[in-house]
Length: 345
Image 1 (cartoon, rainbow, N blue to C red):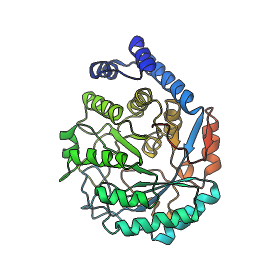
Image 2: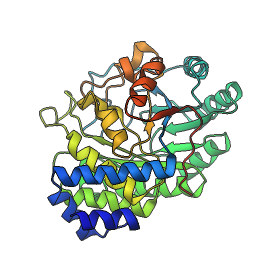
Image 3: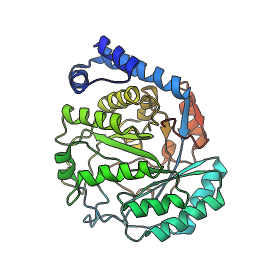
Image 4: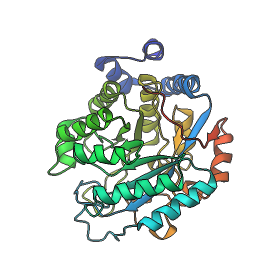
């Protein structure tokens, strides 16, 4: 076990069989050694910096019916909302005053937000805050759409692949194509975005073989950022009675990803903080180096409910910047409020 982990640390690579062996056999001692190596790798590439992004969840309308998601189109219990451009700019202004230099606009695949509307919003953000980075997370769009939006000044685009198992992906995403998801990521990379992929840990039916596919997919794609979080059920989906993914498995996947792609930006996700009150700190100590506290208006935070129990107040709220900084400092890291561009080329 130690020999394999040392090989991964020194070469940043293992084959499918070796990764599967690790996932099937890691014990507590092995996990501790893995996270120690991941921590060393993160420090080597990013020192002890943790980058902070202001998250703005601007619409929970969605045309998709992903079967695990609380804002899926057919969920009649979802309380729908869209932020106006002025409301989005108010969030940016609040974040700018707090010192945030990256804003992440995340939403469902909402047809209301045409390219023209997105371009207008992005250009307005850049006018208000010229030195900031703008990240979008608004799903699958056409090549032309991605191209036009990039010209407007978007710096980054997050599009989690969710699972690299085609059959599992398409069972979770009705009327969707795994190949198209991958093509969107390739299109974004070709167009010069800093891209983010990522996957869930603990999806019902997911195996260690599936998780190895995710690791190999990320290694091959080499995204600038990779969002990894536990599956958490939502009360209005068919998975409502399923168990959440675990902190332990999520930490293992974070650490392995850090070792496979040493320069990747790796968030300690809100989902990890939801299933474990110390999840963010555990993630950072295992190689994560990004946090994305919530800048959305208080009135909508609970409505962006992808899963049960999502935390959006307290230390997950962007206005609690000092509390976030204090918690991160308490584990030996420092908060970095710069744009925090990825070192992945």
